[in-house]
Amino acid sequence: MRLTCMFSFILLFGAAGLVVFIHLQDPEEIVHQQTPGIKYNMGFQQPKKDCVSSNNQDRRLRKNTADGVATVKQSDSLYLSQNAPTKLQSTDRRQGSIMFAMKDQQKGEEINSITLHKRRRRFIIKKSPILISMNSSILNLPTLKSEDRNNSKWKSLYQIQRERKRIMRETCSKYKSNNRRIITPYHVSRIFVEDKYRVLYCEVPKAGCSNWKRVLMVLNGLASSTKDIQHNTVHYGNYLKRLDGFDHKGIYHRLNTYTKMLFIREPFEKLVSAFRDKFEHPNNYYHPVFGKAIISRYRVNATKEALRTGSGVKFKEFVQYLLDVHRPVGMDIHWDHVNRLCSPCLIDYDFVGKFESMEEDANFFLHLIGAPQNLTFPKFKDRHSNEERTTTKITQQYFAQLSPSQRQRSYDFYYMDYLMFNYSKPFEDLY
Image 1 (cartoon, rainbow, N blue to C red):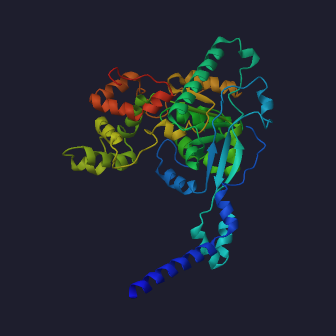
Image 2 (cartoon, rainbow, N blue to C red):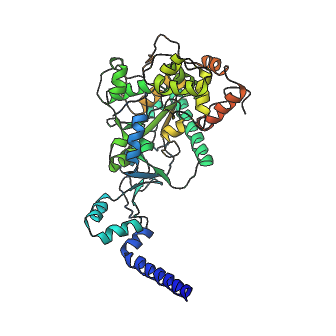
Image 3 (tube, rainbow, N blue to C red):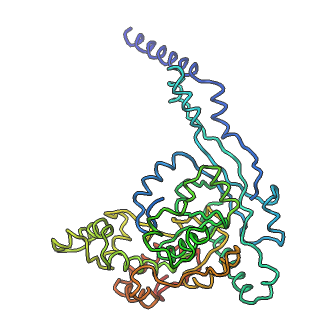
C-alpha cells in the first residue's frame, strides 16, 4: 500500500512538472529559437602594444569576443576586370557572404526589466543571435594600369601574386572546412586600418611589421617620412587603428571594400629572429615572464641567478618550451603560427608578400594602391641595428643545436605555414 502511494505521488509530481514547463514556453520565443535570425541584404558587394606582447590584448579580446561574431565566405580576391573602380558601386556581381552575429543587447535589457516569469523563462530558452547577411569583398587587387601591362617586372610580380593566392586557396580548401566560417573580434585583432588609401594590414611580427606600420602612418598623413618615426612611436603611440576597434558596421565595410594584405616569413627563420631579439638582449618583459618559466622547467641544476632573472635562455630550451603541450607559460605572437595570427582561411587577403622579397613586393603593393611615388618601403633595421639580420645561414646554425627529432617536431609545428605559403623544407632530413 505504501509503495503504491509513493509511485502515484511520483507520477503526479512528474505530470505537474511537465505542465509547468509547457506553460512557461512562449510560442513567439520558440519560433525565434528555431529560426537562426533575420537576414538583411546589404547594398555593398564588396591601441595597444604591438610586436611586443599580446597578453593584455588577449584579455581584452576574450571580453570582446562575446559581443559579436562574423561569418565569411571566401571569394576569389586577386583578380578584377578593367572596370574595377565601377565595381565598388555594384551589389550583385560577387558571391560569398560575411555574416555578423551579435547578441541582441536591447532584448536583454528588456528581459531584465520585466516580470519574474520572463526572467525564469530566460534560463529555459537560449536566445539565438541575429544574423545579418553581408557580401564578400569586391575591392580586390587592382588590375595593372594600361601603361604597366607591357612592363615585364610588374607582369612578373602580378603572376607571382596570383600563384601565391592559388596555393593559399587550395591549401585552405584541402585542410580547412568550406562551410560557414565565423569571424570573431579575435580574428581581426591583428589587422591595422589605413582609411585614406583603404588598406587593411595584418601584422606578422618579425616579418617587417615595424616598417609596415611606419608606411601606414605616412600614408595616413601622420608623418612625412618613415625615417622620422621612432620605434616607440610605432609600437606605443597608438596612432594606428585596429579593425577590432570598430563596430560591426565598420568592420563589415572595411573587410568588404579595403585591400587586405599580409607579409610572411620563412617559419624557422622567423622563430630564430624572435629568439635572438627577445632572449639574447636585455628585455624586461620576456626574461621575467618567459625566461624564468623556461629555465625553471627545462634546465637541470639551474642557478639561483638564472631562476631569479630569467636571462640566458638557450635555444634548445626555448624549442622545448615551444613543443611542450603543457607549456609553463602561454604562446606569444612572435612565434605563433601565421595561420592563427591572420586567419588566411577565414579572411580573403588580396595581397600576400614575403619577407624574403620584401623590397620588391612592398613597393609593388604601394604601386598598386596608388601610393605617393616618393614613398618606398624602408630598408633600415628597426632594432639592434648593429647586429646582422637573421639569415638562412644563421637559422641553420641555431637549428644545428637540436636533435633530428626536435627539428622534425618543429617543422610539424609550423607545417601549415610551410604548406600554405609554399616554403620548402629547411632541412633535407625532414619528412
